[in-house]
Image 1 (cartoon, one colour):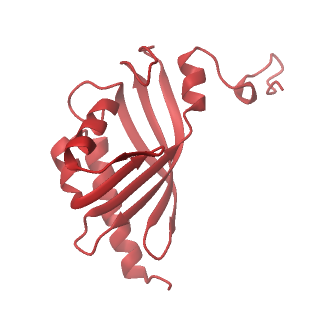
Image 2: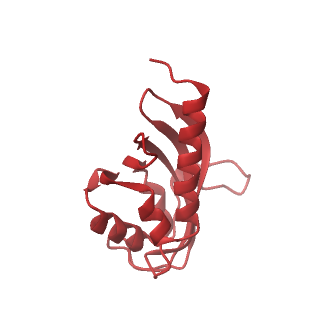
Length: 160
């Protein structure tokens, strides 16, 4: 079933409000975007209650409290619509200031690409948020190196 333009705009506005709360690092506004019966999944790790979702946002640095990253912001590059979800290609920017998945803080800035799947219920609350993010480039940058495809040679070409 195709969705109409009104439904596209509704989803777009709801996602914009959710991401604005994250970019503002406002834990209360972030949590208000989730439904009572919700699930957030990040790279296969499920958070299925408000307490664990709040904790995960804090761990990353999406709240006013210190987290693994500072200056976090997400930018949507492209959006797509399914019958039930808005799917976005997005980038996450920030600075690594605390331990993250065993990596000690480096103070380095980063950019990560991700795909997010957002399902909003009829009341305008997030029923499901699933984000898949490639952490390989982050690990390389945290170790002070980039993947081979991103290294530039003296001639300006990427090395192989």
